Length: 240
Length: 319
Image 1 (cartoon, rainbow over the protein chains, first blue to last red):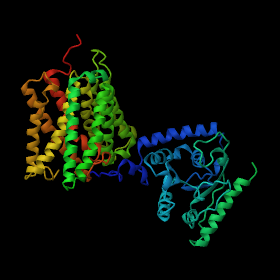
Image 2 (cartoon, chains in turn green, blue):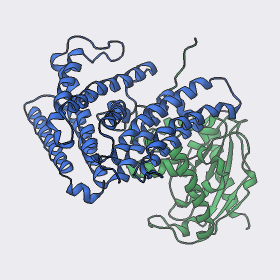
Image 3 (cartoon, one colour):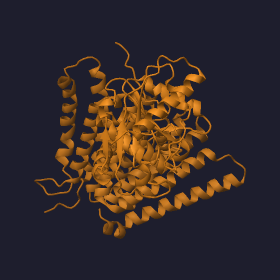
Image 4 (cartoon, rainbow over the protein chains, first blue to last red):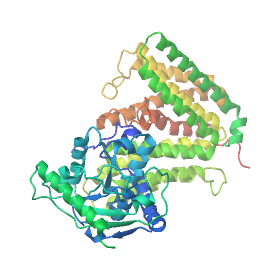
């Protein structure tokens, strides 16, 4: 008789708060159900309240993992990006979120982990470690990572400089990076306000870019950052 | 069982006093030990776990029959989920979902009135459910047109449903009995005391291993001590079931004393076979849900049927 093999879940010894904070998270039926329902409601809300428009959806790669990069004006950016990916991919779409803000307390972690499916990104101490987590994630087929390379929300409306993390993540790999530009975020939800206002949002999705041809040097990292920053800015300035 | 009934029930109020008194006593004891310089971190964590669990259990009973049944269904579902995650069955969402559905149906059967007799709790449906749920689980491989590895899956799902679902759900069905407060509170209280007694007697007098390949920390001395204490408990709590004759008390004590420890051993060998220490970490200082309710799963159905054979579950016929 052959022995049965058991495969205990790797997170079996974790408490509830560790379940929420640790990454990668194990799949849970209830979590998936809640997230799916919330994602559908969110799509409706964004369409009606913010009259959200998404252009260039066909630019999203249909196979393989990819990264979405976008300018960061408000929390609405993340929600808008989540609405842009196909609904069946919602559980494999991970917005990189600042661990020091979105995972600072249990209720916040619960919202970030369950509803948003956020990847806790340490932007202060362990940035390199968080990048490793991201690249591990992207090695699996069909995952989507959402990154705001500016690292923080803009207060002036001007787009900030892109940090080097995104460059280091994709340099010399075949990963597709999709630049996006969200218009209207600053007016719809200014930093510091508790609730968003009913202002129009429009998201433009550009053509995917790949950086396989570049060698892993700091010059290429800087070049990638500039290239992506220009691509996003161009989407923002192109005529409507 | 309703809120009004709980407030008027001498049994319910007496149990609150006993349990509250014991918690305060234990808190004072731990504080004294702490002041005298003993390391009480482990005990303190366990005690804090009790401080959270006791109000939840009492509150659920206070809210009445529906809350009690919902509570048992939730415990059964999350208990089974721990088992499914530990064995890897959880990766099969259809199988897991089917067992969840079966457990929810057990709750429904415990809640709805018997369509022919009019009593709360459809006993016939409750007892017949395993045939249908097991049947449904057995059909999954046929629908999938797949044989590879299916025996393990159906076996795990059936054990999961029968043991963690059906056997445990008898506790919820007890809410339909005439002496619901007495039976349920006695059962929960006696089972936990039995656990604590086995642990304490084992620490104090333990020499000979009970089942060294399953649970090396359990001893024959601890086990015997727990059975003796469990035999005494029903006499102290006779007010919970005033209609019992002395020999009923002996049987009741024996069911809890022996059954409780067997339930503990069952979960122990399941964990040992899988190769994990605890079933989860939901309750701080106690481990997973299954680590806490392990004894109850085994005791609840036996207690239920023993009292049903002796007295019937409803003392007063509907006429």
